[in-house]
Length: 409
Image 1 (spheres, rainbow, N blue to C red):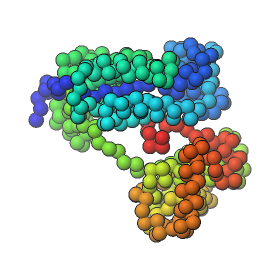
Image 2 (spheres, one colour):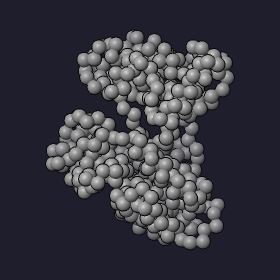
Image 3 (spheres, one colour):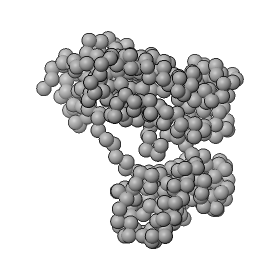
Image 4 (cartoon, rainbow, N blue to C red):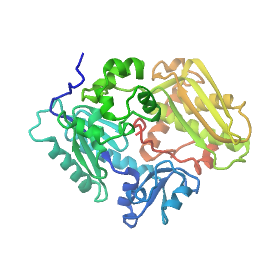
């Protein structure tokens, strides 16, 4: 068992690169007139839409992610709403990934705006701090002068990400054993990645109110009294700079949801929007080379009630046709006065044994047609080819770019 003051004293070899206000910075790079202006990226240009991200000019005026645009506009006079443009963000994501891959074959993109480089297997002949500054300069040279990023270096992924958040925007920091305690002294518990308010309350319940107290807690306290699982011992190691997060996370569900643009849509219109979501889910599912055996649909009503239905099937499915048929069947019992709909596929497995799948997916013609449509959509853009039934819905339902996952990129 490690003593409470034993930290990982190896040379830091993990680098975390984090684009600053990624979507807003990309829009400012693409549209020079937006530079220096308070802007908010939204998925819909309506007053009550939620803000996806904001420029640093807007953040300085109190604008936060998740805030309704109408509320943010009161805080930031002159705030500009810019509708998200996924094609731009994918382009920058690929450019960032290409830059990081020039330094190591062990690169993991944690999200659309964050990547991690592991230098352990390389014979590095220059300090990582120099590589960090080089990456920052390359981002400006190869993408644009408005692009900035934070770089963090640590002995594990957790400390590298923590370092990357210390001095935003455009900072570069290193956390090693000799400055570990000093860094923790400057932070709050909720500044630590993975510690949200609920976990903070559990730590407070055993007398842990600061990161330094978290660091000094014993493995037994964290495991038995706080987390009540092996997570406690993992946090004990993680806080001290030992790696516990270098594992691959498998995809368990694939889904989409949509807040209806009107509260009085006819049933037929709601079903066409559900069909649109089914096509999006099918495209993502096949992009992960997966098939599903379960489907879940839900609806939220204007009087704040939640309805759902789900079913698991013995045979797998993967095509848009199959997903839509199953979802529509389940959704037939949904209530009226709906404001939000959604679905996800679950019980995923690798794409094999299609000859045993549902709804004629086993037919060679169906398989070839589905593959051909996916190839065209991959090449020329999302929904270049789609069902005519979803044509109207496409005007309203836009493709979203997730921050927390790169599965669909």
